[in-house]
Amino acid sequence: MASPSLRVAVLGATGAVGAEILQVLDERRFPVAELIACASADSEGDELEFRGSSVKISRPRGEQLAVCDLVLSAAPGLLSGLLPALRRGRASVIDVTGSLESDPEIPLWLPPLWTLPEGPPRPRFVAVPRGIATGIALALAPFGAAGLLRRVTGVTLESASGAGIAGVGELTDHTVQVLNRMSGERSESEVFPQSLAFDCLPQIGTLEPDGETSEELRLRAVLRRLLRAPDLSIELTRVRIPTLGGSLAAVHAELARPVDADEAARLWKAQPGIGLLGDDELPTPRGSLGHDDTAVGRVRAAGGRLAFVVALNDLRLGAALGVVGAAEALTR
Image (cartoon, rainbow, N blue to C red; front, side, top):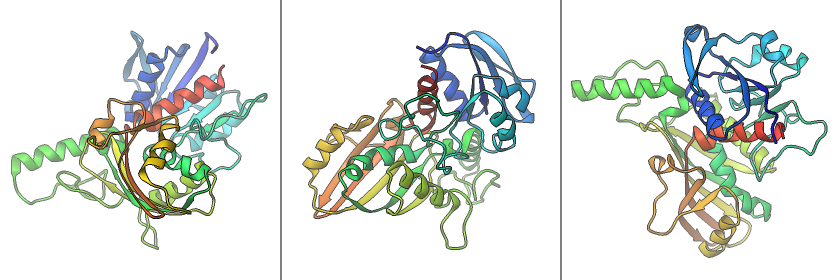
């Protein structure tokens, strides 16, 4: 059982992922004695509510965080400058921004694929994979464990929520502007490469010289690590779509031997975290929002090829649940 008196800091508490983490902490009755809500200077001095009390938002300070029991990191860019102080302190750090996931010395958390090493000592830094990587890894894991994976290709369709509150706000504003104007003129975009309203943008992250994006490279790296398959061929194109929440991926896996839909279904049903849909059900971003598992559907098998679609709530299953789950494991 977790300690009843934990001092917990949330980096990025005003963001989309941070807000979801606070909600899950409350839902799971995580024992927070003191909450330190941190965000950028723009939010300093504002207040948020947690369990009926107002909490003032502050900018993160290394010496303050170092004496916390837990630091839950959900704000890209905030953690790196704080790492020296955190390494000197006693706080356990759980990061879902991608800042730590490439470090082979830092354990990942995605049960049942990755759980924390049996203690003691418990790790002080833990990386939680985020977004669509969670769903793809869980869906591919049974085939990887059976030694069947040879190549993975596909397309991800990821909502504006993956770019945080700013992304959702920009999509909402631009959608209203287009509806009011009803013209082909584009709104200026600050969050996405161009306006996302009524459009799809095949670029998430910055473009690299070889034509891939930084986030496509990151997704490949984290999937290889999650699946313990460092040489697995993975080619995934990441696309931003004009929805407010939930994400989807159409995945094609080349396997070492033929696997029919029935065998695939048996493997998925035995995999925790997977919700296998019926033939008349569709995995959709919107439909994923009310569920805490990865929906798998549209399954097609031919020879050594398997095609399927996964959908998940990218903020909840793909972020907050993992962070709080890791926090529970660290404090048992």
